[in-house]
Structures are given as C-alpha cells and as structure tokens.
Length: 552
Image (cartoon, rainbow, N blue to C red; front, side, top):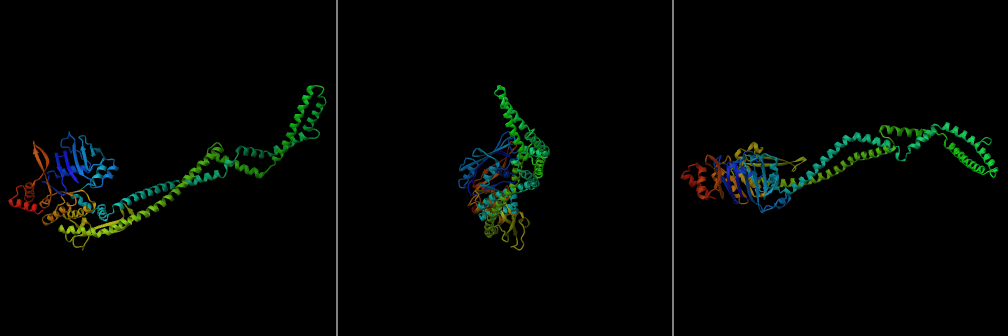
C-alpha cells in the first residue's frame, strides 16, 4: 500500500508531504485547486514521462518520492530479476532536473522507467474519467475475464509458447524466401557439380592423357620410325647389333696386344648390351603403339571436356577444378539443407501448434466457466448503483488464428432494458453510467487482482442523490480489502472516508501555491457542508454534513 507521498518543486506545489492509511482516503477541493497536479506527481512515480515546464522554481530540481509497504505482495523475485535491493518498505523516487532530463530510483538504485512502470503496475491502479473508455477495449475485457478465470499462469505459459511459435514461423518464412531465391541457383550449381563429378577428376592424370592422345594421333609416324629402327638394329647383314658384335670380337682378338684395345672391346660390349636393350624397348613400343580408334576417341572426349571446363570456370588445372567441385558440393549441400531445415521447423511448428491449442482450450474453458459469475457480480453491484435494469452479455467465439491471449474472440455487450436490446457499452451507456459500470468492474477486479492500492479520480462524474450514496457504500466496502483513494466532488462519498485531505490554493506574495491539508473532524464537517451548499454553508448544510459523517 501507499504509505507516504512527498512532492517538492512540482508545478504549483512547493512542498507537500502526505501520509496515507489503509482503508478509504478521500481527497476533495474546488475545481482548479490542484488535485490534478497532485495526481500528476503520483503518475511520475508510476513511470509516466515528464513534460517540460513542470518545475515550480526552474533553477531547482523537482523531487517526487513515494513510500510503499510491499511485504505482502510477493515481489522479491521481481526485485532479484531486476537486480534491485529489496526492502519491505520500498521508496520510489523521480527527479526532474532543470535541464529537462529526469532520473528514477528504487531504493536509491538508478532504474529505467519501464522497470518502474512494471513494478508500480503491481502496486497501484489509477482510474481517471477517461479510463472508462477502457471498457470498450478488447484488451481490458480479456483482462477482466482472465482475472476472474484465474488464467494468469496459463496465459503466461501460452504467451511464452506463442513467442516461440512466432519465432519459428519467422525462421521458416526467412528460410523459405532464401530457398525460393536460391532455387535456380541450386539447380545450376547442382548441374555444374554433376559435370565435374562425372569426370572422376581425382583419378585423372591429365599429362598422361595428353601424352597418350599425342601418341595415338601420331601412331603411324611413330610406327614407321620404330619399324625402321628395329630393322636397322636387328638386320642380319647390316644391323647395328651384329656390327657391334663383330667389332667387339675383333678387338677382343687383339686386346692382349695393347691395353687400349681391351678397353675398347669392353666399351663395345657395353654398347652391344645397351643396343640389345634398345631393341627390346623398341619391340615393346611397337606393341604399345598399336592404334585404337576407340581409345583415341575416348581420350579425345575426356581431354576436350577437361579443357572446356577449365576454360568455362576460368581455372588453370585439374587441381583447381577439384577445388571448385568441392566448393560446389558444399554449396549445393548447404542449399539442400535448407529444405531439411524447413522440414524440421515444420515439425516443431506442428508440435507447438498442438501445445498452443491445448493451452488455448484450457484458457477458453476457464473463461466460459467464469463468465456467468462475472456477470452476476457486476450486475449485483450495478443494482446498488441504481442500474437495476442493466444486463451484461459476454460471448466468446473461436478464432482461426492464435491471438496474443488465446483463441477466443470476445463480444462484450450491455443492455439497459432488462436484456431486450443489447449493444456495445459505447452505444448504450451514458457518461454517468460508464463511471458506475467501471466502478462495478474495478470492485470485482479488486477481489481477484489483489492490487494493494486503487485510486479513483472523479469516478462520481454525472451522478448524485441515492446513486451517490450507493456508490459511497460500494467504495467503502471495497476499502475493507484494499487501500482506496478517491478524488471526489460528492459529499456522500467524502463522508465515508476514514482519512480526508483537502487540496486548496494559497496566494503568498502574489505567488499561487497548491497545498494539501489533512482535515480533523470539525474541518471535515465544514468541507462536506461546503460541498453540499457552497462557500458559506447554512446551519442546515452543516447538520446534513454531521448526519452524513455519523452514518459511516
């Protein structure tokens, strides 16, 4: 609950320091006295962005500080997550600096506005006149039903799963777009890879092919030379081989005559042996040189294909072709993996879809179960607020897609003639009726959301008489379970408060200042009498004020 609020140098406020009790606190004051300024200061604590020109003294900073008792509200986990020191009595402070900047603190730790907003949303709810429009908003209607249905944990789990589901959908879309864009590229690269793969490049000796092909193309010339060479070597009469044998034999006969002849004989023998080897090699070459048109055609095709691909891919040799083939293989594999990845994501999406459907079904079931009770509670309160013929109708219909809070589409309607004609709240309810409906809704919500503090800013707009008295009773009953602060113009509501502050303007040295005073019993009588009759209340108004206070 809100324990203390201190505001310095803010708008028309120089300095106020207010203490708040549990139960119902009333704030009154003439129009223009500064109640909205007081509320504006409190909204800074709730994380609202500061406007320019709000410093009472432009040379000094403005400070708004609120002390909350939070021990009963299970917020230690939140403080730990945000790395903030936890205190049972937590102080939230905003500072507006002369240069236009602002700072925020929780227990003296600097903090971001969104963190403060998240924290205070669990501590306090400010309801002003314009917020009655929330009744027409789907998000608010869902929050109302889900609070009564106890769907908080289910919705948390659903929204976690929905976030994963949407992330998977996004991944799939991006991958599918990439695959669609790369499809032609995939087909072309696959073709290029298959071209290179067909050549079995790793097992090819290009130089050997080139040599063999060259040999086959000159087979006739080579064969002729080999035949002639073989004849010249092995001819019985004039062959080189026989001539070397004769020469060797001749020198062997005279080798004893002169050492030089022995050396020549040995050299001729070596030449004769070498010539014999050459003769055998030529014979082998003659066999190898056998012409094969089929082999020549095969090698020619292989040779031309390698040259064609070398020129096509602008590489120098087979090694670079092999590198290119491996690169293409990896790229094709990567692109092909996109399809496999998409299939895996499809499987995950199917599983998440089933999980979300189950959660959405549980959420919907809880909502449908709670709607009759919600309607009954709100209509019961509306009867007390002189809206006896008002009826609510809340219908749920299934959505074809996953919404942020399930798969229900909500239709929230109202009737002011015992259910004969239903329409949207905006169509049916007047301004005063909207305020009463919102009060009824907030009263019901307060039982389930368990907010420590709720503030109503002129919830009594457009009502009077018996309705005002009934509204006072509703507010008083609500304050038994939580801290309620009401800014009001109605004496009936002001009289039921357990604590009463008056906001007023004071002029000192031609400077206007907003001040706030905690009223004692006599001052309350006077204030309520003035609310009944005006600045100079009669004895009758004073007695009426006393009567209202005694009724509490």
